Length: 395
Image 1: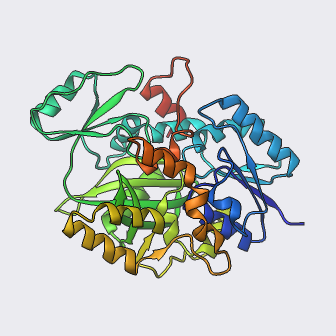
Image 2: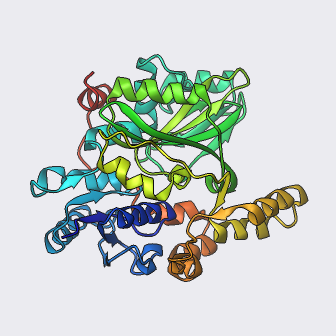
């Protein structure tokens, strides 16, 4: 009898890659998704889709919805996909003994997701990170007087709430309900990574850069051939932290070739599109087996529909329009498969809820796609950063 894997989000193309990979590996794929209609619901790789409560709406009800699916469908493995990962991690102690949860412990996820605690942790490993302070730290004002800075929420996704200040410009007032950090704005090549890791070992890494953006989120991608400084940074961090599961980073590589990690996403990112589809699940399932990592041969990939929208929006900016159009013409769509065509063909329909929110509000498509799953801590007083990091990464 085939084993069953539960994917905890169905709206994003990166999840579709994982669904297809597990289907190729002989698994029955179930999807839990707050949206009634979503990308993966129409995929041949998915056996069944359940609509669940959004974790932002009601955390406990969301977890109970998942537990109900796990019991009903006899789930063997749970793979979180995006920001909901931080909520799903709370299931670990409530699962039947035979069920595996493919993600890090909740404390580790929160430490890595928190943009300030992450740079502090990486700094303790001797790794390059930008100088960063909490907005309410007096050193933040001194930093802003000396260099150009980036201001962003400590807990955010899809570039929500990011702003920039030139050297000497005043900083905004702090919001205790949404704490922010002030970070040196680095100049250089922006490179992102996606890795599958196991007990402090890097099993696979892909590197890429955004070519077409919606807000600060890439929807068109270019493969980056091996960049040793970035690989060395990732290798050192994973060894020191003992990370296990899926982890991604955003880097700025300066003119001297030094790689500075500006933030961490302890989950799947679009770099998974550069992994051969039939290779993803085996590496996750058999980390101690000598499965050679295989990447796709594609250099340019895209989410066609949002790339089309961004290209149309750039029509009055000739240089950008030409760049976008060239990418649109030559890049392969990440969802298109001849034997599974509906996710691509029906994406304007299955993604209508997100598209409508983005079109009728000031939210970017990335923000619209994550607003109901973004991490919001409980109301209780959290531990200090030092205490949280020590619990998550005692080494």
